[in-house]
Every structure is written in structure tokens, then in C-alpha cells.
Length: 201
Image (tube, rainbow, N blue to C red; front, side, top):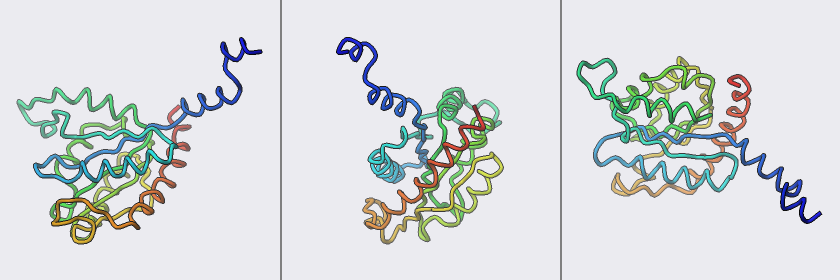
């Protein structure tokens, strides 16, 4: 029996391996590329909270790491487009880290969304936003875009205030209640992601 266990593993080990293999991939997308941005701080915090759950494979995806000039711009170096398509295709769902600029999302995020179509389709997403009013207006704009891309965006929406969740507007120090909000959002993202996996496969 010991040899069989070594060769094939115990039933418990097999179930754990199957569970790991079937975990969804959730991309945490940093929606800003501007100098001095705070989205990496927010993204790292969300990933830390998410990893503790153990219910999915969470990966930070930084738009700034991909060369994505304005879509259709003549002479632009779009050499990052293929890699962008590949990384988004691998995800089953998303968490968007969204900044509010002039009552909307950043141009970089809108451009990155527009680069792809089918890679977004029939996946789920949550939104974590920040701004002077918690990024609420940017979130509402993003919801319309995601709907057009067939992304099912969940209702719970952690909204971070530049006044209460950031020190001097730059150092991210979220209120304790915000962690609960992130987990409540993920409680909706994960089952929606699991359900939509059946549509795509």
C-alpha cells in the first residue's frame, strides 16, 4: 500500500491536487500608468487579502509593462499587444484597480480594454476604486464598458477615499472596514467566475 501511495498519492492528495488545478485565475489589473501612481500599493494590498483566501490564483497585471500606444495610432509601437492578449486570455476573471481622473477612468485603462474583445468575453470582474469620492464616477463609467465587453461586473464595490484611506494622498493606509469590503467583493467574483467558466469551455 505504501508503494501505491508513493506512485499515485492518497485520495486526499489527489483531491487537493485536483482542487489546485481547477482554481480560477484572477488578474488584478492596475489601471494607471502615470508617474507617482498609487495603484501598485492598492493592487498589492488586494492581492495580499485575496491570497489569504486560497480560492483562486491571483496575479497582478500592470498595464504599464505592456507597450500599448493609442489604438490605431499611426507609427505607434504596439509590440506589447500580443503579450497583452496572451495574459488576459489566461485569466478567468478580474479585479480592476480604478483611479478617477476627471470623473472617469484613465485613458490608459480605456485604451487597454479597447485593444481586446474576445479575451474579455464571458468573464467576471470586481472593481476597487479610489478618488476624492471613492472613485465612484469612474466605476460607473467602467461598468458600462465592461457590459459591452460581456464582462459580468459584481455589485460589491470597495471605494477608497483619498482623504481617509491615504496619508497625504500618496501613502496607502486603508481603514480596517475596507478589507471586509474586498472580501465581500471576492465572495461574489469567485462564484460568478466559476459559473462563467462553464460557458467558455
